[in-house]
Image (cartoon, rainbow, N blue to C red; front, side, top):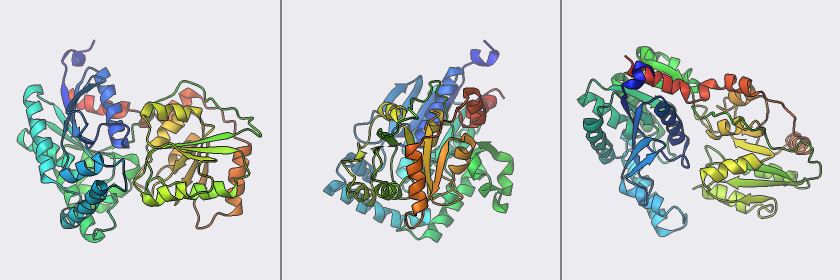
Length: 427
């Protein structure tokens, strides 16, 4: 055991959610935290409660997780999210939009109270644990500001801004004045970057941060990547000779019109409805449009099945049962669909739909080499329909070596980020 492992150090993550069912950021931090605990680092997290039933404290895989309340409107929405048409849910959404309009000049800041809840809890834990490092994780500016304030009061703490999402390329709600909101985002970004000791940006954000306005932060930038790849040692359970048999198409994850929208793919399936297949969707959406597009398809309940939100364990099992995994690109080229790394780790064939050539997932699937890439068009062309038909009739038999796959996607494991944090603790 080396000298570092004998002297156990403590670090703190402040992030919007630690629950892997909800989003990429929580799952990314969870994987990094797990890797750190393996290396004898004491890891604690402060995050928001998802709803009234969320635990205030939890010990998960050796990581201590403390949860604080979100603002009232978010709690109202989350507690009534099982009924998208319910009065409480609609009221919460309506009032939340009004709050967003009022706070547009300060976007994406929505609650000063949330900052103080996070900060107060962080300070209480620091006085007990003596954190060497605090990592504020975006996509909530409140989490970064809470980490910043802890650094300001206790300068000996190293402050890392961990931007799994690019701040100044964040999506702005349509109801806000885009120019005002984006100006505010950049103002917050400059302020936080100026106070951080290190800024971990994603590889896909590199070109954005090469702009002249970010030159003064260049020495603080540390290039990382989404740490969600975890090699699956099992061979893909796919029968490549299923001619005439039902092909199981599987999508897992949340859906929205800007991130993962299955509407185009559903139209394609309607154009090849004489093929033998099932499209199984495991995930939820708050989009009424997407919900209607799924349920109004004449294939719904026959060849298209929507199973709703399922546990991470069940989603992983359904991915393993798939013949072809389905992926949908994001509108924003700085946002990477987190599910692609789970898909790639399974070594199965992936059908990925993208809206533009700057789609953030394309470089990963091109490197993977076992994916069919289809660009979405205004209308379903006969070429696209034929491409899907050919794939359903003959799934490519691509042999993938585990060692080579791990080498290709090592930067997408939790190790680089964990190693960087450990290197700071040794200083």
